[in-house]
Length: 390
Image (cartoon, rainbow, N blue to C red; front, side):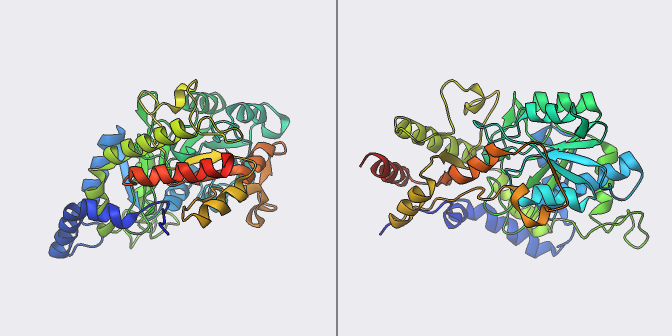
């Protein structure tokens, strides 16, 4: 039986093999594995791509979030960490790293519900919380997550933050190359936190991440924090981390970076095919709607489809059926953060978060690797149509 995986990393390597092998050979030649020349080259390339003043290569997307928050604690409070009275608003419908980074920075995560169409944080719920007695004067920052490769409403998020004197850290783990009104995501907040986990649109050969910012002060603090907290690692100023990116990962990412726009365009083509072939199925909600300009694959606002996520009340049955047909399909995410044990007693939630809980029971992501063949996409469609209409 033919198997269709969510993502074929072997095929991607073969497609980019000369570039990647050449990059690895250069590293073997110079043997500068920590802060080698590829680090500065990668940081410069991404700063130019995102149109920001600074990009700092770090060890993972999770650390990119933590480092951003730690930098703001130092800048805003003159202290190493936030405290529990400091609140940071985010969505519960995301990977656990978004929430636990807030806890690791010393602050309290406040979960507000999502928009039922985009699955991104509901800006109206952010506003409602800030105008409530619970949110008065406590909120230090907001972390919008650009889920599945689609931008959160950054006009509203940044406007609300400015009104209330809060910072914005964009979680861009799933949305490298996506835009909001012609501006690259990660460049609109005070910082952007990127993940280059192997399955991401731009993926490394292990863990790696990036902090993007237009603030020289923030950039300097992050650069200190990744080196154990000081400009001189033998005489440090702050409680820091071994949070740097390896030269090897920077070399690989530089080689793969040349293909990012091409690969994102291929994801958009597959998404358009799915939408065309599945739009008439009753009971199946698709991520793209003709009347939704923010889901257009073309600028000014560009969805890069890290995931093509459908929604159905028959999610579990559909996933099981697809598995029997050799088609992988994944649930991102089955448990909202406010339902996880790790956040018990360490969080606040605004309202019942019912939309997030409902989405967690109904969403299903389909295969959408950039090198996925047309016949494989057609087979995915055939299996889904067979499940719903026989």
